[in-house]
Length: 155
Image (cartoon, rainbow, N blue to C red; front, side, top):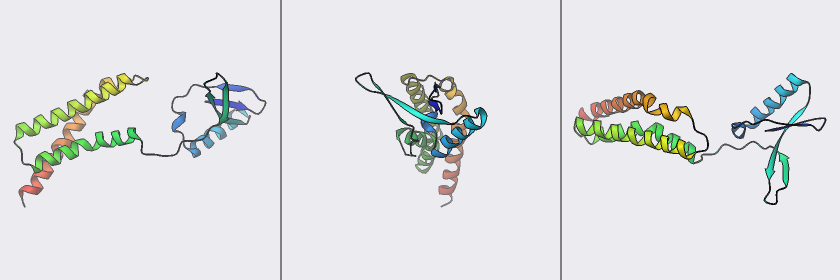
């Protein structure tokens, strides 16, 4: 993020999440900077061109969109419910139900670990994902299996 003061001086601040700011949040950021420093500021984005030149353009907040990351997160969140519902509806045995749940949980854990290693930002949360989701995935998967099997057993 590049802050340009009214007197022409620049201050570059490394912020990884500035791309996710909405228009309201960016306006609030500028307002709070002005209140804290007494100087007016603007957000400017630097674009490095192929010929080595630097082009500065006003920073424009990204619009909301359903990107691949959002769809992947939705799939991860809905997986225990969908899988639990399917195995309960098919009326599979308890060992198959447990094996399917463990297999899906392990595949999700492995996918998060691989995606974290492939990205430029490595987080400690990916290392702890297997531990934290073991309980949440297991609880939602088991509850969904129980609820769906109960509902379809009485029909």
